[in-house]
Image (cartoon, rainbow, N blue to C red; front, top):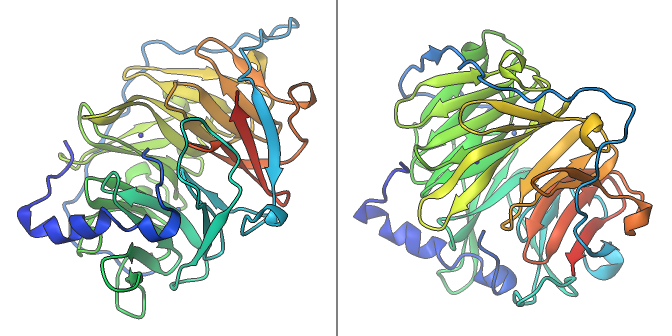
Length: 381
């Protein structure tokens, strides 16, 4: 969902990053440690801010108004269509992955979204499970997080190569389940903490222990969102303990819980709601939880449930498109928010009855990962 600046000494890295995806897919769209981390300041816990206004849906027998559906064509892409898996465990703005196999559309981005017809495949050489991938700096290279450390795909030499850090090389931050960036610095989601690592690989980084912050030994981070404006913040969901907000510059943390208006402390995913071309991601912050969807506007949470048109309160993933439409993957299927109301997609919209687990808005349409049916795609018309 500010950012450290890149010194001159980082220029070579930034240059290699800038071309790292060229061998993968031509032109790609812009836009949870086995080791013991060391270093970084001791973080302090700041009390959660009090919500000044919380939208709580009122149960009613009258059906909730339906939001405007995004018109378009739904289709399922499978291995028969060239996709590398029918059970995508990871999707992003330009890729689908299962295990350590990535595939991405090979056709250049067109003026309008279209179903990809050809795909290229790439195998990550570290670990047995890729868990996240981010291109950074913006327009730069592909950085992949795995359960055995991070990798950078480089294309600066005669042939494309992988630059990886793992347990074999003594890298301390392993079993990475999530990844984001602030400039060229990486933010890693580790089993029990969040780590900010300068220049992608430099250690030690700065580590925030989630269990210590929330006061519970079983607390773990889930997914994260990075906010770059007005200040750099890392928002981390947790497994029942709400959201931990990390002020990167100050090193302090705050917590957002159900007491502040979250519909559930089990926060599965987070997404920034705005993106300035120059300043980066900003408020609001959207949250997918086990009790519905929530939105933090900078001072309070608003929330939505099935009483407001969601197909299920079991919300698994969330993403915000460039046009402001909010997309969610729920146990009841896909849904979108048009700014006023939710629309749940079903047979009347031509949506196949598949179990969706994740969502990503891409230049090739809106993508949903399914459990075993392939990649569900909406091509807006």
